[in-house]
Image 1 (cartoon, rainbow, N blue to C red):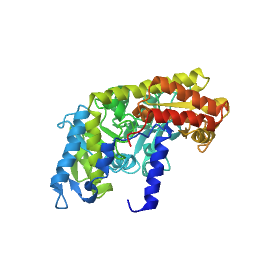
Image 2: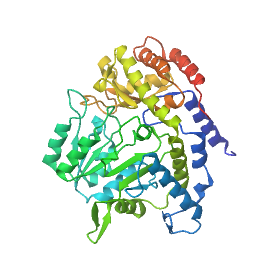
Image 3: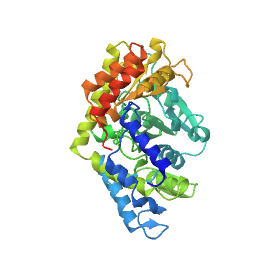
Image 4: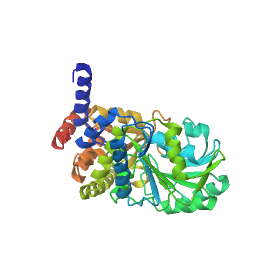
Amino acid sequence: MKDDLLHSLIQRETIRQSETMDLIASENYTSPEVLQAVGSVFSNKYAEGYPRKRYYQGNAVADELEELAISRGLTLFGLSSEEWSLNVQPYSGSPANLAVYLALLAPGEKVMGMQLSMGGHLTHGHKVSATGIIWNQVPYGVSKDTEMLDYNELMETAKREMPKMIIAGYTAYPRVIDWKKFREIADAVGAYLFVDMSHLAGLVAGDSYPSPFQYADVVTTTTHKTLRGPRSAIIFTRKQGLKIKDQGKKLFTIAEAIDKAVFPGLQGGPHLNQIAGIAQTFFEASTPEFKIYAAQIVKNARALAEALSELGWRIVSGGTDSHLLLVDTMSKNIGGKDAAIELEKANIVTNMNTIPFDPQPPMNPSGLRLGTPSCTTRGMKEKEIGLVAEYINAVLLKTRTPEEVQKDVLALCKKFPLLY
């Protein structure tokens, strides 16, 4: 690379990642092959439209690429192409979710989504998101007693508010979601059931978390979290049964409507290099080794929750069933932002996070969100996770300085190096 300044930044970031214990639940390390695909000559090609229906010439290979990604994605999640459609063109998770809204709802219609402060995502109808500006969120949360979903309360809310769409799948909820109960709630009020499994896709693919496909009408996911792929997104949609009107003129299946919402509704040409990375990701996630990896993510998250709990930290909801956990740092009078800053000094990277019914402001909430996908990719298991818990405890309780702990973190990272 002739650009010395850019080359230096890339090198520095590579070193930072190599020497950092990454506990951010929404991050992971792709394989060198995924990076190679994303940086391939597919970056050069424009391909507006869908396979065999492009607005540009020269897309014979691009058509095969997109069809390959679609076929692999359906196979990975055990879906039939007769029953499910897969759109691999969304640029990222938020645009993918916005496409679902645009396809299925008229402006102002009600969407029932989890509150951001309880673990939902901005695009689940939060007021600062386009999804909350254009559509009307019916917020729900968790039980104050259990810090888990209360399905009876969800049913009552749905029957009272009669939303057009219900969203399940979250960004900071550690427990198993009962997809069947959500289907029952949606059916009771005639709503679409939209599952956002962005955090869970790799666990679902690896058979370490229940699959939502038996119950959902639409499923979106990013491809870069537990799925360990490029920063991109995809949308699965049922092909049969449901029809909607396009501006009151023509009937479409919801799969057709969502394809139209992605292109030309929200995007121009797809990023073929991202789609190449997605195809490689699906290839890797279909292996027996990936199932072992997904299971280890959950084992590591549970080990981290148990170790921190034994050290006296309160874990929201008492534990985890997935790849993430929430730690109530204010239980020891430490703000979440303050905790994250101190941990970064020791090369432990986390993110501050609100906890249910948080009395603290969002910019210094009461908790930390911790996740285990990245350290599991490096090969760490329960033994190493126990050490990580000790490091976190030592930094936050100031029994050791961040600089002292940093030396141990660097040694552990060196023992479990990245592939690049």
